[in-house]
Image (cartoon, rainbow, N blue to C red; front, side, top):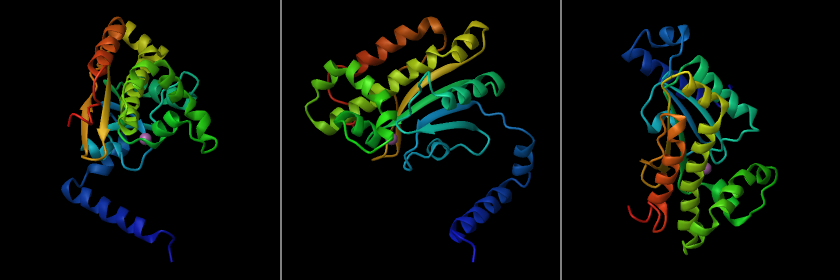
Length: 223
Ligand code: CO
């Protein structure tokens, strides 16, 4: 008997469903991919990139890691970004975090889980950088959600600072970066207002996004 048979059964039903509505779907995709979006999100199983924005295979290039981190030393993430921008010519790079992120919470609390602690040091730096605005949020869950938001904003900044994005903007390529956050409690996305269309707009967008957050309750609390 095939191991994990139910997953193969699911797959067959899924592929047949798509082929029923578009018999040429997989043959067309096999020839080429031309996605308009690069999604950089968390690995969390509750945040499936294509599903939550209703996109089909072929429509979004995806990179996921714990706590949706974009780091200048991460060859994996930088390679995905470079290929997406330079070769696939995506028009939008979306960094999407989510409320209730265990990685963010671990970084906030300084919890120890093993090797992942080293990865989460990138988030700890965000926590330290924004200690003043985090400390005014008294409720711990709300503070974690605020760090989820701040982390998205900082990771969008990291995207904008990459050689890949700067070079694309310099040569006049159409490229917009976005920072979003997903509510696993309601399935909805929120825009954190850090939308950047040119390198010259990076700092303004950063300040605008931060001032939309600080001070006051997190967006979760205002829902
Ligand atoms: Co997460």
